[in-house]
Every structure is written in C-alpha cells, then in structure tokens.
Length: 167
Image 1 (tube, helix red, strand yellow):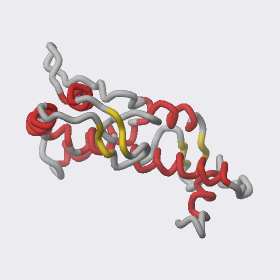
Image 2 (cartoon, helix red, strand yellow):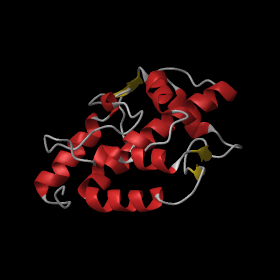
Image 3 (cartoon, helix red, strand yellow):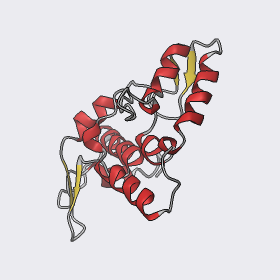
Image 4 (cartoon, one colour):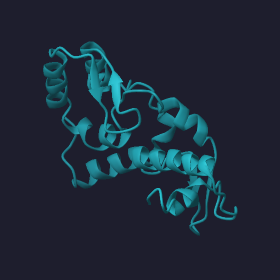
C-alpha cells in the first residue's frame, strides 16, 4: 500500500465483503483506521469473521476513537509479551520515568507526543499487581471489548507451553 496505490486501505474500508469499493480521502482514512485496529488487536471485536471467510465491521469508529490521541501500550504487546515479564518491564519503565523529558516519539499515530515521566510510568500500570494478587488491567484507553482474540491466544500460549508462563 502506498499513496500511489491505496487499494489495500480501500479494501479494508468496506463494512463487509459485499460492499462496493469507495474511493477518496475519507475512504483511505477509514481504511487506515481499521488497519490500525487490526495491528493493535490482531482481530478486534469490531470485525466479525464468519466461518466462510466473510466479514463485517461494527463499532469500529468507537474502538478507534477510544485509542486516538492516547499514549498506551499496544494491546498485542501488553497481552502476549509484556504480561509475561511484568517485573522487568516495570523496572525498565521506572528507570525511564526518572529521566527528565516532556515528550516521547511514539511509533504510531501522533508521533511526537507530550507526556511527563509520571504519565509514561502510568502507561505500564496494567502490569502492577493489585491487592488481590491479580494484575491491574488499566492500560489507558484500551477497550477491553476488543481483546477477545488476544485473550484466547494468551491462554493457548500459556496452556500449551509455547510461551513462558506469566510471572
């Protein structure tokens, strides 16, 4: 996909496989937003995929709005990788949180983003244990309704031994 050939974004933009392709800037932007959701959640709950491969999107605008303009740990990392090493990740975040900075250069969305060291550390708070011994799930602005597939993969990886158990 390039600016010269936005076809992949236009394919994703459709609400379902039966809808005719739209073109134009709005269609490209909507396709990009849906691709962002796919990259973050692998298969967000906003897209329904049937056994025959057909698909439809619903609620994707709300799912994207919940993450736009936010600094957060991508759910695919939070739920499949970082949750296996919470102490190491928290130690790293705390070390970074002692630096003096006013911005981070995010890999996605806004690019240069205003954030304090304290806010940076807070982004990783979902890894901190609560009083009950459970891990907090507060990864700012991440819609837990979009995590069904990631939770299933996490469970499979843990139960099958393909990934280290969560620590």
